[in-house]
Image (cartoon, rainbow, N blue to C red; front, top):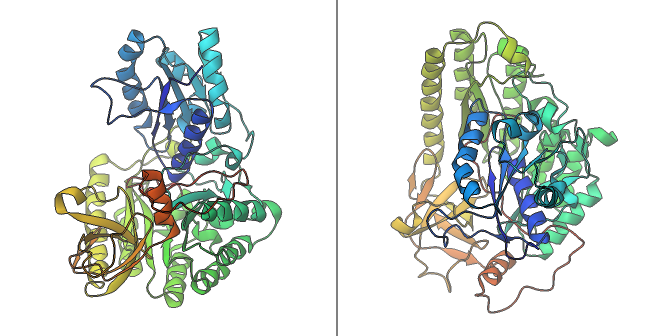
Length: 501
């Protein structure tokens, strides 16, 4: 039925949505659909099924969705076979209004039942009416669903879904539900299966990843999981996102420092440097605790790169509160920050607070914060000029690589490096997933450059897996271990990830 039909999944929001979209793609391909080739399509041509995986964190999320839907309305009117589905956090929140505002939408599904999409599409086709199915609690743990991952060398691995925090600015807990943890054995089995397929980097993923274990009563479960990842042969790099300062304990720092394949990189959301604003946000830590964590991480891993999330203009924020945030930024010396203007979201306690900060004041503070963050990030990057670093060669991260004749990769600290395609000192050209050693020659606030020959190359099974996907592999990767787990993929960095950690 679906063999000749194409699909496209359009993703908005956080890493959880990116990983959910991999599952949606896997589900659709399992149902017989094929991926839509946008590059090879004729002008104005669209997929037979377009799925919007939405986010509800930002203020303009609704407008963005309905604007994109309206662009498809005349295309759908001209092509009765076309179907449109809306899922994700905004669908969970606006279940009763999406089909009212966009009656041409065929399917609306929530965060707890993404596995229902193929059935809902078929039901909508047969019954010729919109299907709206929103569950209030998780139907099956998403990791059990088929997954189409986008890369051969790196993958997201969910350790938990949902969140038990009650931050006043965040709508995520009401849409994703309470935290549910996977058993450690299930997580490690998935990672081992991915490594057997050629993956060499995994990112452990959770809405509040370091509270992992709360459901089965083990406060050190996350540090134990990190150490267990260190025992997996062939797993080169382990990362995780996003932790919460309130639950970030010293055993996690020790596990990071003592487990060689856990990378010296930490994304630790700050949100505000003002104790008064943190209290109003219902963030259960204060400035001193946050800076204490940063100090202990740096003591254990001096080379660690630390990034953060910061919200500017939370209701009631004064000049003194903003100054406190700038002070923390100066002391913490982040290598980067996702900075956000406060976004008023209906359904959150903060939306009802008085003393909303005027937009022009928020904009001024935001610009000053970005300037400071960039200045510090640039200074920190300059310290790496002249050093040798090891990169995992990446695919699709250097937007200007074709023009500059460079390749791109990520260091152990997750910094992005663009490097010259000079392989005169090595035996062959690197492939995505291979590891190269280069010398840094230039620093910018958001990236580094290495102009000079690649000094060393280590070809990896990840590179073999990538080449096999391209049909250029001279030798096939060894037989894989299936275990019913998802296939391989890449956690692509999100430049505009929402501040919900």
